[in-house]
Length: 304
Image (cartoon, rainbow, N blue to C red; front, side):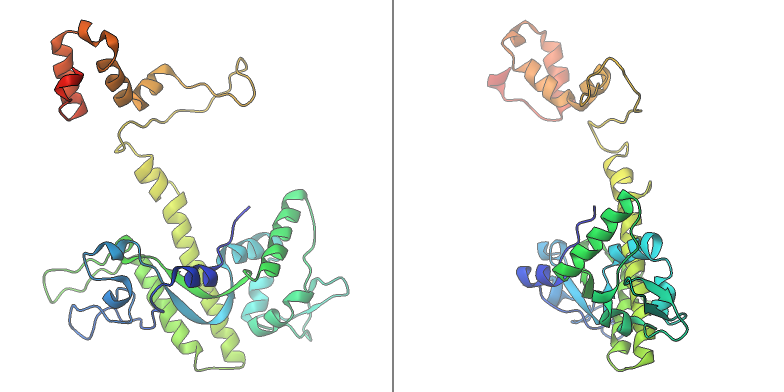
């Protein structure tokens, strides 16, 4: 199951600088980062410093939204009519058993009324997988992590902006920074409204937070994502990929790896162990020279 991070506690525990409040990246027409923007040197550290690869910050959303991973589960697998209710397109009431029922005269017709009645709402049980998801939702409600009013901003080093040398060309801020900017603009709008308009903008904020969640999930998990494209790609030395096939001769809990793959993964360790073994004196000098070149460094003379 998904483990939800308590964003507010994470921010408080790590004492991050912030929040980021401005959607502006630069000060005016200069190339100086805005002090309250998503690339701020005051919040994230000076450009080129180690701090810019580890300092987080956050955005005050101006409203409560459902934690994006939980919203994804709710809207796709548990309560598919929820987006229509939160957006105000449909209204609902709570039935005797606590379930949401579409009702033209219902009192749940937007984000505010949904938040006010969240403790009364029950979700329809089903198979074991559905029930586990529902239990996870209830558990996060009890822990106070079902809703969030803050969004983390990751360190700038992992979302760099490409600034062209020619002054007449616009910088490439990247997809992630573009979403952050949209969320900041939305958060500033929400602060000045109330009533039905507040609910409409809150739902729009939910959609933007979900957009960020989907962007990160694709970046990490899909075929062209960070793990499969970079970590498991051919550019990684001493790694291997293989096709999973059944082998009835193996015991449960045991896997078999071809010797050729093992040799490829542990090649440096095997060569190092061979060169430094008691039998190393029997190995021709030509082999030692080849090993030095293969390892890319000079071995200590006393080890040869």
